[in-house]
Length: 109
Image (cartoon, rainbow, N blue to C red; front, side):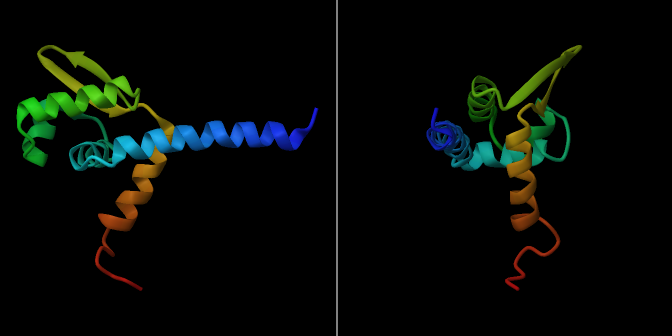
């Protein structure tokens, strides 16, 4: 067996997974949702209030995130809580948060 072929096959699969994640992140509402969730678990009502995303859009985007297995939910009474389920998505969101939302935002040095 040629190990370079195996590595190339693994690389192609990984590139496909990375592209799939980037495609999900390319929507501003989903990106903002994941950015908030990267800071910890949130209720649906909290996400709506913090982000100002109206309920139909919020539900639609949260469904996409669930379908892509990027978030998990848990129910507590009437409340549904969301958290990031994908370690890869969390790692990417941490970098994006640091680069675009952290204290040095706007500092181009």
